Length: 137
Image: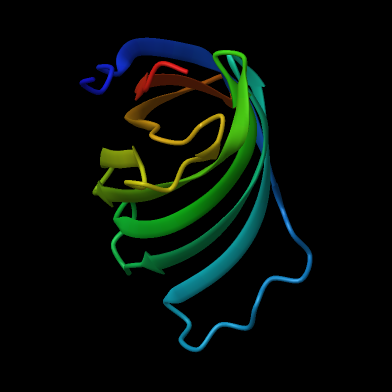
C-alpha cells in the first residue's frame, strides 16, 4: 500500500498580536527580544506564542527580525499543534518576508502539515493566506 499524497489547500483569515508584559531584558540596545501572544481567526483558528529577535539599524526603514511561533489551532477541521518560523527584512522601506511551517513540527490532526504563509497589512489588520498540504486522514 503506497502512502496517500498530501492534499494542497489554502486557508485565509486574520490574526491579532499582543505583546506580553514580561518581555526579557535586552543585551544590546540594537537587539530587541519580544514575546507575543497571537489569536488566529478564519480558516486557521486558534492561538500561538511568538518569540522574536529584532535588530534595528541607525538608517530609518532598515531592520530585521527572526521568530519562532508555536501554534495550537484548528485547520481544515483538524486540531493540533505545529510551529512557524519567520524572518523579515526591511531595507530602507523595501520589505521581504519568509513565513514557513517548520518541517515535521505538526502533531495531532496537523501531523504532516507543510506550507508557507503570506501576509498583508490592511488598515492595521493582519490578513494571512496559508498555502498548505496535509496528508489525508
